[in-house]
Figure 1: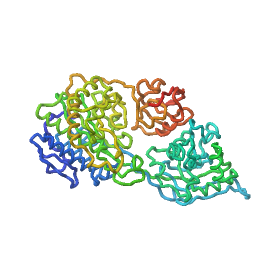
Figure 2: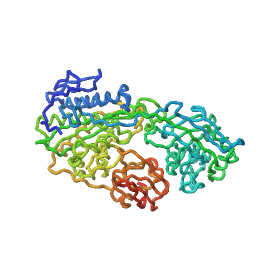
Figure 3: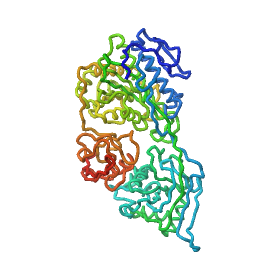
Figure 4: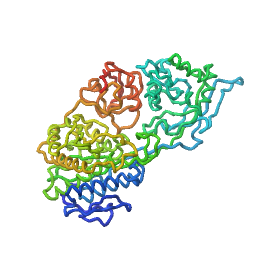
Amino acid sequence: MNKRPAELRPLPAWVGAGITATTILLAGSGGHALAVEAGNDGAATGSAAVTGRLRTAVEWLAAPDREGRGPGTQGIDQAADWVAEQLAAIGLDTTLVGAGPFQRFPLTLEAKLGPADQNTAELIGPPAADGQPVRRPLALGKDFTPLAAGGSGPFDLPLVFTGFGITAPQEKYDDYAPLGLGGAKHSAAILLRQEPQKDNPHSVFDGNQASQYAALSRKVANASEHEVGGVIFCNDASATDDALMAFDRAGDGSDRRTMPILQVRRDVIDSLVKESLGKDLAAIEKAIDDTFEPQTAPLAGWRIRGRVAIDRTEAETKNILAMLPGKDAATETVVLGAHYDHLGYGGVNSAAPGEKAVHHGADDNASGTAMLVEVARQLAAEARTNGPFPRNILFVSFSGEERGLLGSAHYTANAAVPLAETVAMVNLDMVGRLDGNKVIIHGTGTGTGLDELVDRLVGTHSFEVAKEPGGFGPSDHSSFYARKIPVLHLFTGSHSDYHRPTDTADKINYEGMVRITQLVADVVRELATAPERPAYIEVASKMFARGGDRPYFGSIPDFGKPGKGYAITGVTKDSPAARGGLQGGDVIVRLGDSAVAGLEDFDSALRKHKAGETIPVVVLRDGAEVPLEVVLDPPK
């Protein structure tokens, strides 16, 4: 670590020429630079000046030219350069991870269908009169299509018709039940789209509205839990045109499943089912609707074989790190973080599915990014005037947050400052929509003295505060709290523009951002100067809310550890997982009767159980399978 004093440093070579110590950049390189003159200390201090800087920054970061700061776009690279240039121009140390400020890591950018000659499928049936097996080649794009949610490689699998592919214990319906435990294992499961009784307003599956069980991703997860070898989707009777789905309709493949996932046209499956079971799909669907009984059955003697080739593009993205060094070669460090990435043109995480448009991400999280830079500017100016703080302050702008906290998970696994020396982490995410005086702060119970510090400072700044003591939630502070570091996460609340193209810069409360900037600067200053560091406190709190209708388990996902199974970084205090003996580093591979290949499978499997049930759990620990038992709690 570079322990140079905290005076204004010369700009490194990677920053564009023509910047002076009294110029603050307000846009990135590549011909987009805007600048305003600041005071001699490099930071104009009046409220109007701060408001102007925040507004200019958010408007630039959320402009259409930034392309929603999606992974793989020029816009996100421009945003990364902008943040790096700001922090360098302020005078911070940008050499913690090499010659520049970037901590690089890969992520899966997109999946595309490979060459046609590598995407093949054919149906193989029982021997015909001549003794040779029946072969029915399927034409790519006409009879079948691979889907991005699945994996690549050759396949040769027996076929089993599994109705709608639903397992719903509370609704007392299970398409897999007729096969018995493991009956679909290593088979290709043919799944009808939609759900039973979809036109019945009194159906247990949310009447004539689509329930959770109709989702393609849920059907895939349920199939995976039953250890199928592949999934074949087939349109139900309501799809009058029998169209093939878009390649990414069932998911973008970011969860890296290995089994093939295809769609085959209904007329192809219909003839196959009629030959094998003696009745067509229409009759089968009517029987399910009339009796509410599954019509599942193997298609004796029939197989599907072929090959899928999906080309997955990896993109390099980067965290941005810059240090305000503390006094006398300090080692203890306070981290202030905010993610700068967003959704690009939409995609599976968009709240406007199917709409390909720039998701500007003004509040989420251009607001936090702009505020991080402004706090850095103010604290650096203070250190130049009054001398360094007792502790270092590390400013980190994370990428990959919208893909599952990837940037913060990468940082905590490859920390530039030893985690043992990381005193606390303060996170800024969606801090641009202050409504009245209310600010939301998570993590107030995660470290000694944090609750009192928050109460005192929000009072000083005339805020009303809604406090959540726990340290877990769907933003980057979770990655630090999972490593037993006290955290505070500031947030001004959700809104109808969240993850939509309408999250634009004109809706930001810039005067409110100025007030929150002052609060954050005070919080970070106190953490950097307090005689005693806050001691970590384990708080019993709920993890990511993925729907309040499932029982509570208490595991903490490890988003930075992909692979087969559901990896966890730890368990929450007094949770079912903790009581059952699960530990950080475990990989859950089975929950009850369900195999678990990832987080979606785990979520789907958990929903099949009720609070109070004792369920067996199998984890991989140090390469060996460890059987455990967990008693589930009520939903939280």
